[in-house]
Image (tube, rainbow, N blue to C red; front, side, top):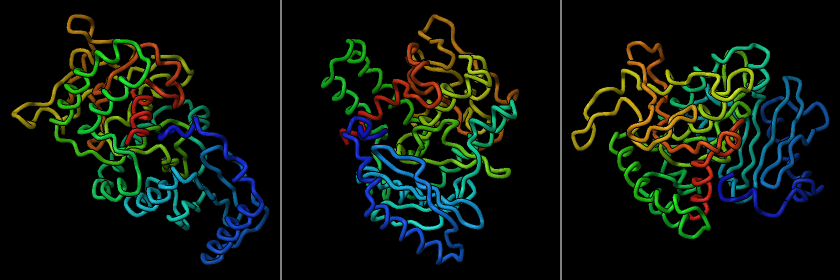
Length: 349
């Protein structure tokens, strides 16, 4: 969780306080009445965590969901509001929101993707989810300044190298992390040269954050969201979920087709007269635990013409470093090393 909230003292008592609950439910009842769908039963506080709480509220038309976060994360309410305006087909319908208090009331998102995929024995829903991540990234570009002003962490390439350097200097880490400062700067400059607009990205997009409602896959839980390069969203998604396949076996799915650059991105001139690369730069981790070190085996992306894909997909996850020992941590939305770094960097914003 960004801003180190997983290390803060527990605040579950606040969420269970009768006076606070009465106030929150009064607001929920008011908003439901305004939409002509009053509550039909007792609410169920299904989620109580140090950083947030979720309450299931029944209505005749189906369940609705109230969510709020701590003061440090109440910005999620603004994110939810903007997402509902920009990409209503990619997120659950928003019934009401109080941005000042960080309160959200949403329609039911459906069934969690993790259980749906287990039943269907089919990973193909991820195709539409990746399209959705790209749709959201593009749609939210005009809102970056507003989101930054509201406190969404700034992890853009312009500030990332300096903050990485300050972070590793302040921590007791292995020498290799300090030695990587120059490489981080080089990678940030190279990624910036491709001219992809930095925008809102989820930063924790796994199969527990996506819900299936009818024929739509909806992306929930934007509390970890940051402003950064949109390709970073694939760290958890591809390496932490898709690559593990249906039977939870590491590297059982070949994600090379998802890493290859689509025809819409390759080749074309970029800044400083450069062209987009067709494979991972030396020293950059690639999915599957393999690494290219300028002499070892490298992932050889298929030509774009040979890879069937939708043109709006986000693709190159190889534009981030990989830690071969981090697979156990990144599984099911666990934190890979790149994301841990971004979480700590958020605290220094």
